[in-house]
Image (tube, rainbow, N blue to C red):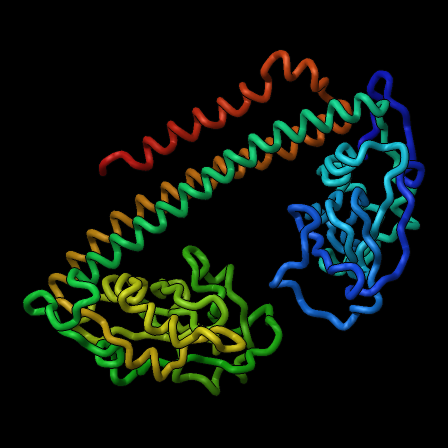
Length: 431
């Protein structure tokens, strides 16, 4: 950690403040816990199941647990539970340090950088820090009453910031729900009444809206390792705004790609993610004309008389997508079957109306994207302020009592909120 000595603080090695807890236990006696960026929680349902149930580390309430491979992510915290964790976790028993202060200190950006610096490994994802090394990390600490005052200040202020972040996330969720309802209403005005479509609209299976010479299909099953040169390939995870670009895509060998010439993409085609995170749809830009696909994405080539922008919005609407999503549930890996994709029904208006609908939805999507970007920008500013505030407090860069009296945290948060309000007024202004 960057060492400067705040007045009245003393220099310690981490080993003077914590003992390592090494007792091994069974998860039958001590319930498994998960070490997350939000702290120590009962084992998550999404956690990978392991066979180490009889060979885990004991955790007692008040212990600090940190993932030895957490690099700069800050996975760790003081446990509110008795339980057990994987052997790759480091369990620390505080001594002479206030547990709440330790929680903020060891999750601070300054400590995480130092924790990473004392680690060993080849690449970041395989980086490991051992207690034998981390116990030599040096840091300044105040007396226990000051530690408690700092911890109380941070508990209070971070809770306020977290509430603001949660409000931003709820705002985005509501905006997404509104967009989904708007999209569905415009794409399928009589949803879900297929028997009473607007005049001149038709109920058409997707395969009849595509070029018969270029049917719906996925691509390369085993693309091999990423090549520096070679044909571009689109994976399911690439089907996101801004991702279909030569600089963002992986590449395979000419030999592998040439066996899948039938699944090559053309500018204006649609690609849809069909495995894992399913349902995202993007239009192929001219920059990646000629690229290919993996088995996680499928090509949809609109036929003459079908507007590709309208068809993208149609596939994103719940009226069209939900039948596909329903069929994917229950599988070991969520996926859309090509047979089902070809046969899904699409409420299809005449071509001139397709273009009008697409134009209207493009304007609304652009506003939604701008709004989301503004909210995410200010959410990130809140997270950055939260991180900086914790680091400044636990390293003595600020006097929390003075900050409280001056209302510095309020002033900083008001500035962020003011900037956000101004940004949102621009993003939501009529075109």
